[in-house]
Amino acid sequence: MTFDLTPEQDQLRDAVRALGRRYGHGYFVEKAKAGEHTTELWAEAGRLGYLGVNIPTEYGGGGGGITELAIVCEELAAAGCPLLLLVVSPAIAATIVSRHGTEEQRKRHLPGLADGSQKIVFAITEPDAGSNFHRLGTVARRDGDGWLLNGRKCYISGVDEADHVLVVARTEDASTGKLKPALFLVPTDAAGLTRSKLDMEILSPENQFLLFLDDVRLPADALVGESLDTGLPALFAGLNPERITVAAMGAGTGRYAIERASDYTATRKVWGGRTIGSHQGVSHPLAHAAVQVELARLMIQKAATLYDAGRDLEAGVAGNMAKYASGEAAALAVDTAVQVLGGAGMTTEYGVATLLGAVRAGRIAPVSREMILNFVAQHVLGQDKSY
Image (cartoon, rainbow, N blue to C red; front, side, top):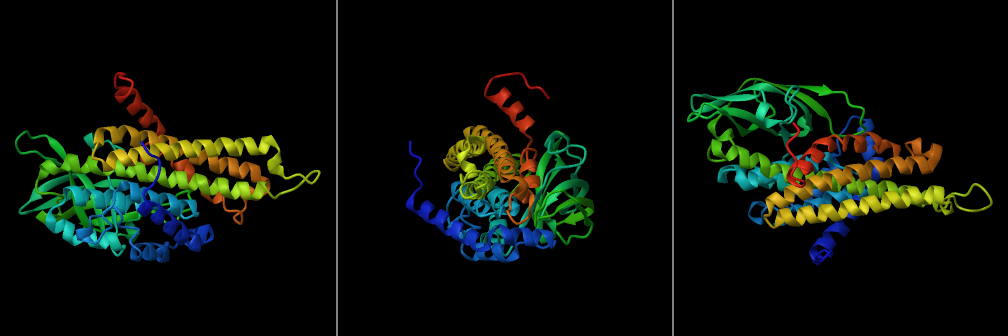
């Protein structure tokens, strides 16, 4: 057992950290408040190869795994630039296409995902079913040689920035008559696909949308994989990378908040010439948050290692635990940072309150803390399913 990164991973961490700090949280906030996207940062990260670290080299990627992509997510967040689309496009979409797409789909999409010139977002959540794929109302039916999609999706990130949406739908199994999940690559300019922006109380340069699919006609090769049997394994292939990279982004955000607060409390003096950080009422909460963030980082490392080793079942447990731990730790870290900074903590200038909405959302999405506890109770503790 080792907790050391390889020399290449260390170099990646240092390089991404340097890139993130060149842009910084001020850039992130400015873009978000202006209703703009972090286009420059995304393009430079793609040009430097950071967006494609987990994509096979034959398609223009770095040939690494989710461990490397988690490093990218964490270090950009630790620099104050938590990019949600890193989770959606390189982690979910690229993994699904790489592992389960046809060779033509890999050639068509992976190079662009690797260099950042293409983005594919992910659409599973629905107004009624949530992310329960057993109850999805979006249905794909055969239409000659192609497909016809109808349904609704909600909380879909970054549709306005993407070329395609990876839509999770249900199709009828001819042998059983039952509906089974299938994934489709839908161009964002497809006829019949419309969107409506959701107003969110989260400061982010990435927007959330409702999607409406009304008789969206797709060619046969829009179906991910060679057959409908690909649907379920392809769907699950994207869930563990999603949880691990979301967790990494949360851990990086927690590190950023603690660093900002620690810098302030180590120099701020109010009474008797002592720094406020010398008082345990200030330093202990920060130290506690730092412990929680570090524990989450260890679980993220374990989950990513298991996933990259092909141990998907174990990675599923570890990935859910990592996401839970990171969501709690990030929320604690940002809240504690705001508290110890006092009034300064609520200003834009000090750059911590700007993250309150995002870390609170991290305890809900992409899977809530309660559903993770259900998962652990059932699959780790052997309890009866509660839902």
